[in-house]
Length: 172
Image (tube, one colour):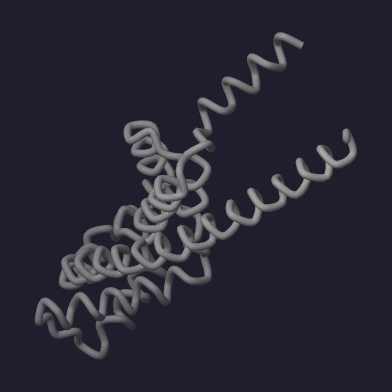
């Protein structure tokens, strides 16, 4: 069994799952922030790198990163880009979305310049809007997960005390 004990220690160290409720909720909130940030395609890599760097619960970070389900993303990024445009005072032409979708549908390596030209006016709006949305979602994720983790651990402690009381009664 020495191999199994070594594997368990290694997994515990790798996953870093025995954190305080605050740090676990912080890890989840960080994952949610990254998952909804404008860093498309880099979410998981950034999440794991930051989890290791900050010594956070890797599982909580990755679960947070992947809370951005594929069917949510188009609506989220559309709304956050519109919000970013409003904040920055960027006028979005009624045909801009249609043009951007058309450019995305017909894109090839040769057409990247056309795609970049169609999306350029929205780049800062996309970045600012999705960063603000990511911060708001991360704050909500932190608060909700902290409350759930504390409630779960409290229930677990009560259950453990009850179980040890029963064992003591049985021994007597």
